[in-house]
Length: 189
Image (tube, rainbow, N blue to C red):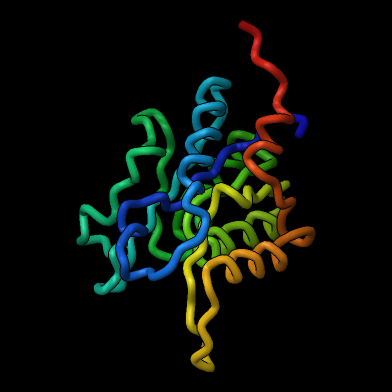
């Protein structure tokens, strides 16, 4: 990583704690996102957040559910940081994200957030398709178990594993929080 990529934090909202979503993997995702967020703030790096405001009335992220749409305290944005709201799975659709990245000559993104099979996967794919060097932080994202069209249940760990397998190489370089932090040059005191 030659330049400090922008850190993209997708949809880390209280509504994802609702039992509506079912089984989840990677309980440490938010803690790892917070570690990256802290380091980016120390380095005065670009941090961009998305907030999902669902149009589906039953969703805990429905735009009328104020509690569910709020950011989790552990990674809450500062008032000076950029937040884009959206109601689809891509951080690029219906937002000014791509324009902001172009205007600020940002060419690489580190993607974190919730949930792996929804906004994380979709935004990662679009990031690569738009030509950005894309890093996906496997321990700073989390998936939920799902039942497929045949009625077969896939647990959260399997969903995460398969999503990462599909995204690696073609759409993103898969990394860990420690991989990123260990590659950064020490800050001068």
